[in-house]
Image (cartoon, rainbow, N blue to C red; front, side):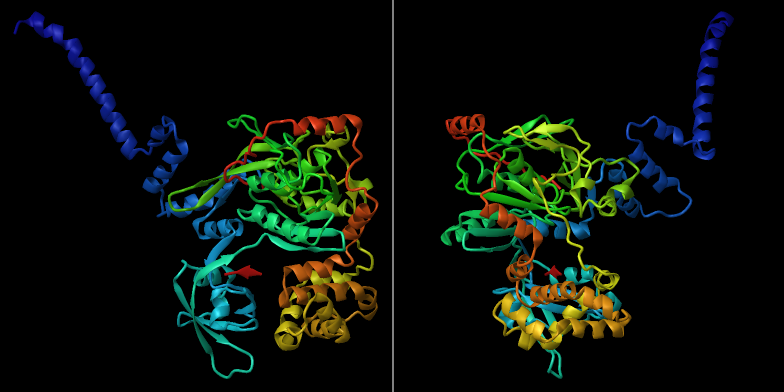
Length: 572
């Protein structure tokens, strides 16, 4: 090769050498000088690459799956208070709460002194069929001891629940029996009713108590209304106090029964969710039935959709205290391992256009969680004047002013009654003395208590037994020192809470509701509204025309969303 040709290749050789040197240098730098982070910085998924990098390079061994499980709640917590992660161990329980039924053995239990105590056996359930009784204590499950520190609510649910048709073997200790009693139980479907009570509270007014909005709540409500209709009711109370919500679709279907055609029930809207309206179809059977809805600070999400639709359409009165203030809609998303996130995808708005979600600030979760305590300390539970409505003003169908930004404010405020509350009474409740006494007293006296046919008879029996004095002696032995003057001051309150707990354990939800409603100030005020024909704002001429026009609208089936949440003793 000539010298000229050699000279022509020199620049090319130098260039190739430089490039090779750079690549070789980068290779050694990345693998031996700790600069692999540059790979992550060029990725479009930094979080995923971070996990890979930790798994590959971290100084100690890391369980990546555990790290992800712990990180999921924190990531969602950066969004809003109601976007949550439900690990696989708790996902089934979360679904069961709203599904209307689950597969189990059919008992209600509590854990006391590291042992499962059966409080109630569900009628017609698997446990009743084999002879399990209230008061029995479960000490062995499938041949293994199940007492002591291992006996937790979570572990009990895991061992006693199971697939329909599967078996579980229990050994129980029963009062009066020297030996353990063996039972083989075939698991079956156990109903989870959300309508807890439906009865005539007087000769004309029916009462329905609903504790959540699940898959079966709408048909349960229809059944309850039909029962009251047979008793020729002329008005109804829908009690949503303490109802933390559930499926938005259930609330929409239920409100539809009370509204004329083409009334807006609720609408939703979010960044990726265009406005969706849900309207009444005019086929509701109870469009003209006098109606009052009860709410309090425990009423949230779907409860507020129901109450807000009734209030904004001037369909009935809302009575009680300001509701919780949750106006966010969650979509459940299930992972391959059956864990679930409930991601907020939209806000819901009442017919007047108000979002009743109370304010929250990122990074101030504790303030949000303690909001009810703050309301209490500010006196909101006791005086309507202490409530500051700072949200934007909106108008109902008839032009009444309502407010957004912090729950549903009732049309009729009923304060919490704190008359005769003493520090002794507070400690008896908060210290768990009352509930512990109620369980032990029922275990010791179940035979006699079970003979009483209803809440009235059981209450009279317990009053004659001087149940308050029995409790005071019991609590004194456990460290709640007797305070005779305070006991006398709070005697009626103590008697009420003791009777109520024992009635709940021995009888059922409806008898419990009947007992509490006898002297409930909110119920008393509500019945006054019915008596005075004040269950509905007085309609103006324009509103009457709106009703006539509404009836002319062609029938359209009421739409309900998919399984979305307008949101929060154990059964197995």
